[in-house]
Image (tube, rainbow, N blue to C red):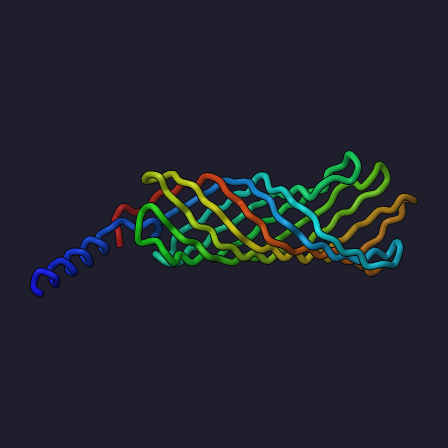
Length: 213
């Protein structure tokens, strides 16, 4: 019994002495790419009809950065540039700039960190539909994600991310029709999108303060 107690105590001490992958003063940054499936719902005052559909979005790049407040909590930001397809030869794109709060639920090892978080920020979408038509929208986006980080060494690793974005793009809508007339949210125009995405890429980290907690 004494030997068992000593072995358990040694295991606990060894586990607690392991370096953590995230703590106060840890700075992480990642760069990635990915894709998503989106549902779109919009109202066009041009033909007075509601339109809906499902589309694919490609992400290149995504960039996330974070600062550790505690070993379980961090704050940071996110930038994402999405390509939502083409209208003829014209490309429809959008940008997201989001502030994030992340929770680090499994970071006892310096090789693995499970990050779950949420963010809110600005979003835009638009592009030329033809030589005479275009759409421009601005609004907000809500982001929720689960992003495990796997580190190969002290500073560099890879990440995977599964998330959901809800775009509320009903501010500053501009739709130009083929006659050159401009339509906006004042005419009843709406544009909302939401869907799931998957991203992957490289991640790096370093500690501002060498002293561990």
